[in-house]
Image 1 (tube, rainbow, N blue to C red):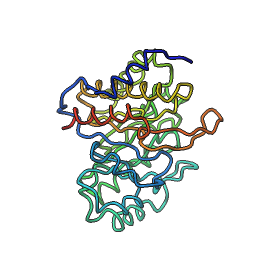
Image 2 (spheres, rainbow, N blue to C red):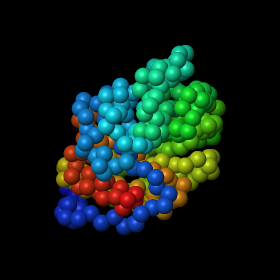
Image 3 (tube, rainbow, N blue to C red):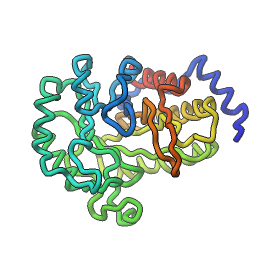
Image 4 (spheres, rainbow, N blue to C red):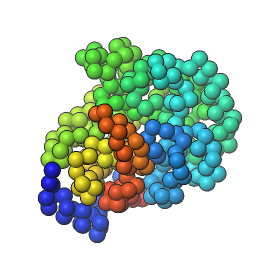
Length: 304
């Protein structure tokens, strides 16, 4: 499909100088990124590529342990899901309390100040992780590490315990916002042609934030789409421009919505993924110069 000048010209404009529309926000506290999707053990150390520009990054325990002496305060979203849940059936591992204690003594103790939050689950309803299990983990973490926030991202609107979503989201009666959670968020990526982005953003992102504000009073985190996963039919140049435009939509909206405290980009590095039965190399933000510059410039305007 040929996009024409609509997306070729913005590429040059963005490269020459991306100009975010808003000034420093009073409610946005951080801009972070998932490191490499599908793993907490990245294939290389990508941190020097972005930690001078973003404020935090997702790290699993083992990789955190290898770089923790280089980190500044509040730079890490400490990923825990792989350590605590059985992803075959979503069950909480029976030794979760011992695991939390071991992670504390082996990795976290003495480095608590580097943690921004514990990221305890990603899209829990997709894996059958119940609200009861999440509450047990939150209680154990709060006891072992008082003062460090806990954080979850749901798939689309599956944080909502409404019976109307039981068919879509599963876990009837066991979804919903767990007691004790500190931050909440959702991912819902724009998957159609960019001509529909404005209407899709309102229907997906804005409407879901409004629903989240009804079901919880917790601070909200947005997840901008920083990969080309849903742009495979476009050229790399077109993908870069579309991704940068979408990034700006998320930041512009976050600036206006005071309940939003952070943006958590998905994702920085690349990974292989099966899309509609086809093995696909999904490219992250790091290899799209316009999108990367947009993310860095928008972060600077929002936080610094």
